Image (cartoon, rainbow, N blue to C red; front, side, top):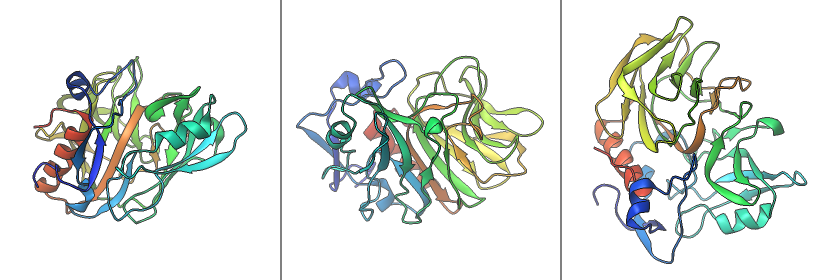
Length: 295
């Protein structure tokens, strides 16, 4: 029962090349389902309770609700999209609902049981999950207006995120707390990882996150001084403090602002009491599922 490889939830088996690259095509994460599956236990069954948890796979077996609520672009109809019996997003239902149209996420449901859903009521700001009939394989914050709101996240937390950020010469904001207070973003060109306060950008040592690089990042927001770690590696302090650490917006700065993050597959907020063992188990589970090499 180590490394999250046990018997409750399964995912599609990928070929060797796809296991290494997770099928990155352009700036999207692509998995190719087959009839053969690897067995996984939902990681939140094995670690400290989460404050909020968002994923396109079932990551807590006690959660029986849908994954996302999707708006169909052609007529603005909406539908909840759930999981398969194996715990993966039910893409058959998703694509049947969208048809040749595009689909946008209005609600990304919280699997922690705390009902801290990510929401976006403004149509032009909703991130995309289906593009003209093609599944994006992530919730894609790839336009300048795309973002989602959240409330109720405690001011002290430890978080884990899986994504593949956009490139280009702009900030890429994953978490926004308040005006000029960014608990996590990437500096110009999606390279240096750190935080931003009202003064400047503060990097976390030499940590980088390249454009379209599929990775898992650990965000230690247990104090006003943040520390970040990548792919299971040691954390590095950002060397500054924030006046506000509570995330209010995910995937962009407030109101859009052209700091869109890009494709996001998983975001889990644990309490400040989460241990190094909790982090290790969660990140190794994510690494095995998404094909990421984790320390």
